Length: 248
Image 1 (tube, rainbow, N blue to C red):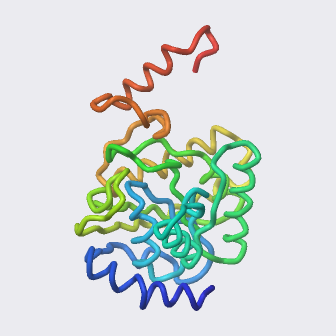
Image 2: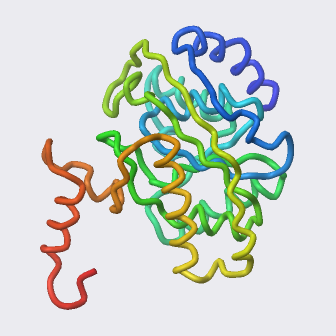
């Protein structure tokens, strides 16, 4: 698999992507040359999962939704081949036991001293804004005892907007921030307040690096809302529809 990864990155896919999108990278030196670490990235487009592993000097494995591995036809085969070839790992996002399985998969990557890529938002942003992060990234940081490196993908949504099937020729880039150390919270992975605090700090750092507007609701809660509706409005609507004093 490592040989296939090298061929994809340096011969089959990498050179074409570099020439077509002329990607720029700032902060490559912030990624450690060896040892485990988590790269937490904003998620604007499917292109993120192509550009980041191809432009990063070290090999990185991403937790990717299982749908990327089950597509049909030539396109499905191409996406599945690329994902497997670059070490992407299919996960079930249905929650419950599936979430625990995803956590275990990520921790196994870190235990091997490798880089793990995570999209804390859990899904792509449909409007270019940065949404609230899921706390799974914080659990992995504390249980894996590793640093987290924020990565801001730039303009990938212009190259391949959500819902598009064919990418456009647009220059894209990424800004890699300095590692964040949360070792002071070691042993507190069961504390939900700590997990939320760590996750929020990561998201605020991503907002600074990317320049995106931060919206403190989950991206999944605003998907499918009418065009022009704000994330804040969607959250208010959801809250209003909840009955009784137990609504949160």
